[in-house]
Length: 417
Image (cartoon, rainbow, N blue to C red; front, top):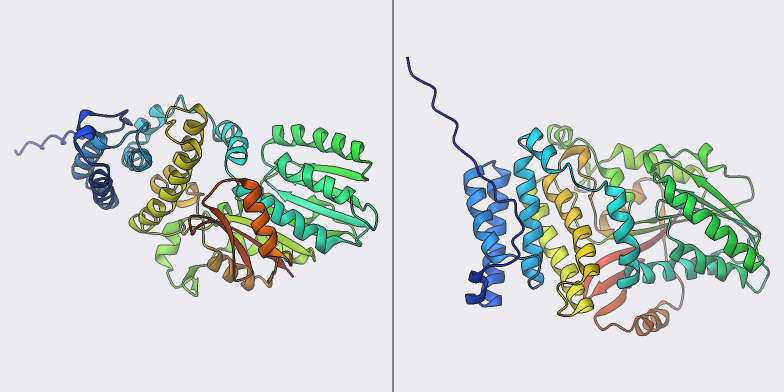
């Protein structure tokens, strides 16, 4: 009898290296090129389940990458970690055991998202664009109903309440429905907005809705006749694109203009359109991470997050040990992990570029809306107020792109039925 050969031992380099002596003898430019080469090679091996070669790539990356190094070293550390997680997922028990001590996703976001809004101007720009467009478009309306589709950010709503309280033709009755799967966010936001409205003397109603986007129905929103209705989605509509990719692989003809059909998204947008809303405001990352092949979205992810990490460096300078920087980069790292390590319905970070959103909204019967009229002058004032070189707002096909050194990172758009 032939004896069965023993299974080969497989080792995976999981640790994010704090640095190594090899880094000191490699020029930063050469190191960056080498890291990109190793990451791409490792992604190809991970995609083809070649564990030994992927592990060797991870070992070499660990000698050059560092969570306390320059932006390319830190970015590489997070992408290497994501690849390692993808490989470890082949052993569900091992993967689960390694994640016992991880904070729940909502707890992690609860720490990072407010910090993101304070440190970077992306959300501030987006909120100002939405606020000015709403004020101009809703002037003269007596009852205004605004639906927050998941942000729950007081930095959006308090300035908006103050703007509506100062309208020359009188204050409207303002109703805000805040939809969020995290009940704690609703319990914190509601009293704060009610208190602010009372101080402003603004007729106001806050309606909390503890539900996810997938659970949205018009009945839950309590829309009444005569209300001027608008929806606001901040950095979360892409999660509706999460679906079983194996089905798409078998039925690859289910595409329109090269864009994967999404029944979930089409149903959601059809529901919004049936509400006869005046506006739907959308803020999303300007990136293509909703791609089937790992290597394709890996390359796109490297391109996108390299600009993000460069902007982190510009904000924090040489302070690589800053607690705030570490919290923010961990948030970006979790996004990278979801893009690289997850598949199917588990992969929620399916960002798409504005051009793809145009197709999706168009299919559902929406038309793009130009945002406020004096955009060029307003954008210049906003950039100057931000006080940080490198950020700017650019008009592109009825959307406004928020850029870092000519690299569009976030897109703000408005739609109407």
